[in-house]
Image 1 (spheres, helix red, strand yellow):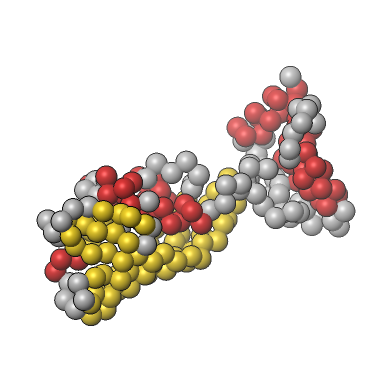
Image 2 (cartoon, rainbow, N blue to C red):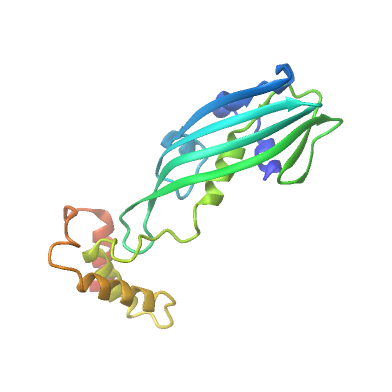
Length: 208
C-alpha cells in the first residue's frame, strides 16, 4: 500500500491531507477529515461515484514512533453490477500503522512505515483511499429483492442468451424472489425516465 501513496505524496490536490509529524510534541493528537465525491474523483476512482465518509485519526507520539489509528464511518455510492441502480454501501472500518523516521523510505509491512528525516510531513490521502477501497467488495450488488425489478428482468433476458453465465442461477433466484413479493413492494421506487441511457443500452441488447 505505502509505495503507492508515497509516490504521490506531494500531489497538489491532496496537500490538505499532510500531517506535520516532525513538529508534533510527545502526546496524543487528533485529526478529522471528510471524504466526499471530489476526493474519489481526484483519485480517479473507477467505482466510487459519490461519498460521505468521516475519517478520525489518532496519532500517539512517544519513544520516537508515531502510532496512528484511522477510523472510517459513512457510505459510498456505487453502481449495482446486477441492476445498474445506485447502491449505497456502508463504510465502517479501521486502519492502524506505526511510522518512524529513519535514513530512508522503507515499508516492510502494511502496519509499519519508515520515512526519511527530510520529510517534515506525512501525506495520508492515499492511506485513506486505499483503506476505503479495500472495504468495498469486488462485486457491487444489492441484497436479494432490493434490485430494480424491471432492469433485472431485462438483464436476465439478455443473460439467458449467453451460455455458461456464472451469474445465471443467482439472477434466477433474484427474479423469483421479486416475483414472490406482494404487489407494489418491489415497485415503490419511482420508475426511471425512458431516456435513461442505461435502459437504452439494455433495450438495444435485447432487441438485437
